[in-house]
Length: 301
Length: 247
Image 1: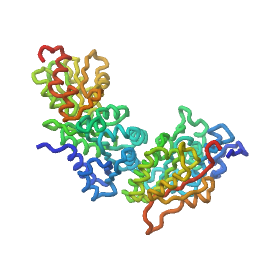
Image 2: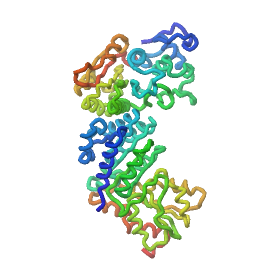
Image 3: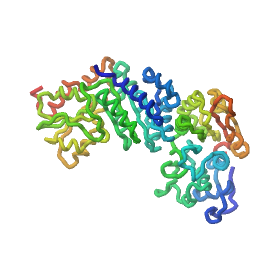
Image 4: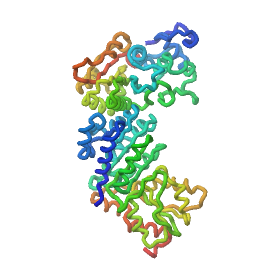
């Protein structure tokens, strides 16, 4: 049975706090049910700031100014969207490192409505230079990405989502993983989009590469696998977020790009995450429909 | 208050070996403004800054990277002439830097950048960030067993930003006794209420002192005070009243 991604984040973070005196964990109520024990063991380095997200991010940055390695956590909507200026100024402008870990993603909290959904988080972080952006597609990748990020000294954003692929792949920032090679288009599946993509392209002679880390974007790896200059990008957050990276990688190659992701239109629906995936065309049949259209295979659908 | 310059000579500590004093700060500010007179607003922070760097903070140009140094965070980053003048007078960077401040090639901007200016601890300008950062820093220092003080200077209008309230609450709840906030109050808050600042901090459990922001003796006494052993650990705030903006 697969482990729960958010619990794996909490357990890994607790383990890192136990092991390394320079690691701090700052959170704002969210996931407190998983963090109470480690907070009791290390009240000096595990801090629940309460429902104060602007403070959350700047407390992490302020700790980083003393040389500590902060892990900062709450839902993506509050961590990145509500406190974006704190991310921009507290970390980037002060030029200190830190690890921001969000949960909730685009529509994990589908029943919660728009207030708890943050499909724009990666695009927002992407307005800032030099952030490594992890989109792990499996609980094991959450653990590996967090350990890797905390061991470093840079600025990392780890987007934890409940949805996971069947199998974990190695976490290799800056390098995509070639899942299968074909003679036609290349599909870039980001994080939890891998399994839906593999199901969608069943029977198609296309390549599939897996991106568990989208910044830095492995443009060189994408070029190396390209059979025809047709690229399909499937991202679990705002549609088109990485389109500019594909265009940069292929700036000297006439190419076509189909960018799939979460649409801008507010659905104003509740239900299950699967309902939202289908509504945004991110379920296997929706992805297949879009790829068939892009490749001129409409009759096959 | 208008300050009339009696000399336009540039102080040259390096040449004479003479250390620069408070009276030199106006000359240094003139290097930046090209003006012999400075408004009350431009000098509202000058006395608090001078007392901090001259008599209170345990930091020097030689210890800017020492993990155990005291930290000073200028949160109210606009109008930094007085800050730059004090840092230059204390030898953190050459006096010549002042003459072309805010030029494209100058490290000194209208808002300070910690990556460009020795001795500047945080990059500020957008209001309501310094105090939350200082809370994190006080926590980080405490977790490492360091006894450094963390002093943050904010403006009274800056406290209009709600992010400060989040920080005021947490700092008291976690007993951050190493943290001191200096509020330079020149009555510039829109929708301000007299006494509100002192009451707010007191309500959250801070030690509150109110001083004349131009009186060096009062500033020194208030800022030098450390909680005595055995006292409940509390952060402290010094509200330094100066002339109203535009007065």
